[in-house]
Amino acid sequence: MTTQAKARAGEDLSPVAEMKSAVAGFMSEFSVFRAEVYNRLQQQEEKMTMFERKSIALSRPHLAAGADTHAPHRKAFDAYLRGGDDDALRGLELEGKALNTAIAGEGGYLVDPQTAETIRSVLTSTASIRAVANVVAVEASSFDVLVDHTDVGHGWATETGSVAETDTPAIDRINIPLHELSALPKASQRLLDDSAFDVEGWLAGRIADKFARAEAAAFVGGDGLDKPRGFLAHPSVDNDVWTWGNLGYVPTGAEGAIDGPDPIVDLVYALGAQYRANATFVMNSKTAGTIRKMKDADGRFLWSDGLAAGEPARLMGYRVLIAEDMPDIATGANAIAFGDFRAGYTVAERPDLRVLRDPYSAKPHVLFYATKRVGGDVSDFKAIKLLKFAVS
View 1 (tube, rainbow, N blue to C red):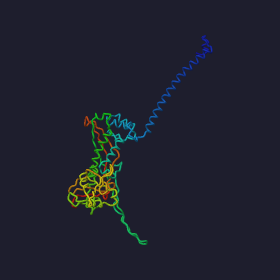
View 2: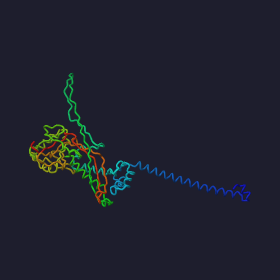
View 3: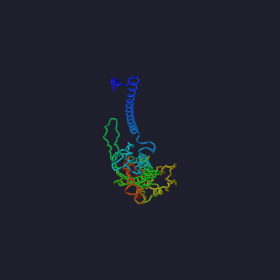
View 4: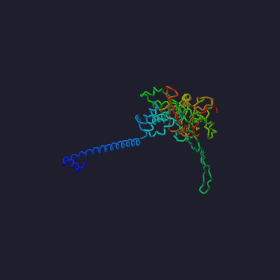
């Protein structure tokens, strides 16, 4: 109502009443304005909080350096092993950014980094050719080794004489395909549900044990069909007529036996001098028991145990690897190998491990199908020699 209308109506138009009315209207409008501003600030704060959380998640390191049991990807992996639910899959996908590629369409996981490292440590420390071989990590389906096994021609020249052309070295390519190695450990669901049970340690131990035994056998005698090719799978010929592509052997001079230490001395010096510095004897426990009793002409044992814990035994000053997959002493058996295996045998493997959880096939147990791709083959036929228990 306007002032003129109020005057016509005879209302009180004193200055004090008019001021009170104006202040009341202002305060009412200010309250509405303040509420709108507060709501907008609240919304803005929520947006900033969400943005800050995303920024922290993106900047978070993918893999913890220590054994952080509270790391999100570790908790998700543990939950996956125990229950295999969709929440664990989503948790690892959202929190473990570095492991996104591990989630396959069939629900597969790459083994947690620390678990994978535990498995690799066990494989390296076991009595396997892997412990002395050249081990390389590859991302392809095979690994090629380029080998120069011929000499460059040479000649002497005078100051003014012409130089004749010499032979050029030849390069060979050795292809090592990768094969799939698998293990299938199982545990009861009740055991997995027990929070005090170390799921990761159990899984790593079971996988490492099965992988170690399968690898060790393949690296020695594998036929190369869906498995690595062992060094004993290659043809062997008398070292006096050795050619590339074969392993040279030294005969003991007796069928299925060895008379004295001379054949072992001959074996050592059948290997080229450039390989002897890093050479290792490889034999199984039964053969080691026989060789350990041998003495030289002065009555001294050829075999000596390691002086410190964890140090390998030595035969004629060279370390000994006990590989149970080596053949026993028998007629015509190549029961002892001697060589520089880091130069002579190459193990190629993919660095990732995969585990699939199957709670249905063996109820009430849960199966864990673990796979790894690995290959192996001889990479230098000069670097390994064999002792054959035969007359010739």
